[in-house]
Each structure stands twice: as structure tokens, then as C-alpha cells.
Length: 266
Image (cartoon, rainbow, N blue to C red):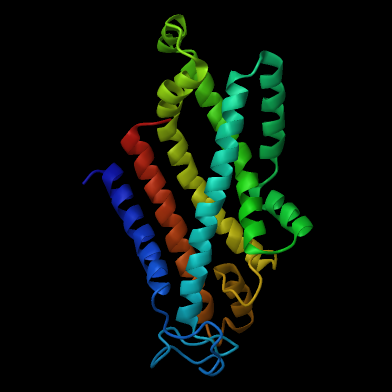
């Protein structure tokens, strides 16, 4: 097995494992999310596979619900960032010289701010909720997607077959649909896969800071925050969400890297 296929296989295995567990949680949960009958900080074993948290809730149940939020945030943020970023990049790629330069400057300014910082500013202004976090992270990543799209569109428009299509009288919308989008899609998909991993980390960071999904909904970031006070007496409460977060992000990054090499894109 080559390095390319190994990265892709391992990445898909990790991602599908997390996704499978999340899908399972919609039809089966060990305990109700609000059930506190397990006792405070019970060790793993018996009915509680990973033990309980400081409120007596089943940690495995909380972990599965946190996975829903992580996957949902990644998909939602990538959708928002992809739609806004690709649309903006396409418009910039077809814009006149001065509009294109102005768009490039604005995108560079936005990209200079870290994704998490932009998301924190948006959430702080709009209020903490899962919907706000998804929109904030999506808007923050849109600038990166837009700049990449703009560069790719410029490269495609410089090709001879675009000139031939224009000479043949093909309209710009048809050229975009038949030539531009199919040629830039592989690179954009790889980038969006990488952005999905960043979105998972951003949501966990926002929840850790109290700016993500509000209680009583579980989130891996808030689970880490709540477990830090008892990390020595009940380490599983911190290790479980931390390991889940690492597994998902590494899986997404390995999948993106495998796709990048497989498609031989830059």
C-alpha cells in the first residue's frame, strides 16, 4: 500500500468510525442526556462504560451527543464557508482589474485575522448558540476559500480552451459550469476537507471558552472545560472528549491529504 492510499484509508476509517457512532446515537443512547442518576464522578464500568461526570451524567452518552455537534458544526460551517467563499472568489476572478485588486486586499485583511478570533467576535456580538457558532466559523473560513477560488479561477481563465470557448460564442455562465467549476472543484474539495477539521477545533475552542453550544447540550470543548477541575481524580472525563477530538481532526486531515495526493492537485 502506498503512502497516498494509506493516508486515505486511515483517514476514512477514523472519520467513518466517528460518523458511525454519531449516527448510532440518533437511534440508541445508553442513558438520557439529562439523567444524573449515575452518581458523581463514578469510575468506568458497569452500566457506565466511561463513568460519569461531576453531575452524574453518563460520559459515553455525553460523548456521543458531543459528536453530533462536532460533525454538524463541520458540515454546516463548510457549507456556509463554501457557498460564500466560492461565490465571492468566482466574482473576484471575473471582476475588472481594480475590483479584483480591491477584493484581493479585503480578503488578505480578513485572512490576517485567525479564524477563531473572527468567530469569537461574531459570537460575542450575536450571542452564544450552535447556529451562531456555525455561521461565525463559516464566515471566518469563507475568506480563505474565496482567495483560493479567485486564484484558481484566474488560472483557468488563462487557458487556451477558455479563449476557444469565447471565440465559439459560448456564454460566460456556460463556461463557468462546463470548464471553470469542474477544473477547480478537486482542489476546492480538498481545501474544504481541511477547513472541516479546523471547524471542529474552532467549535471545541468556542465551547471551551463558553461561546459555543450552551448547556445542557453536550460539546467536546465544554466537556474538557468541565473536566479540568477533576482531571486528577477522574481523568477519563477529560481524556474521552480529548481523544475523540484528536481522532476526528486527524481523520479529516489524513483524508484531505490522501485526496490531495490522489487527485494530484496543488
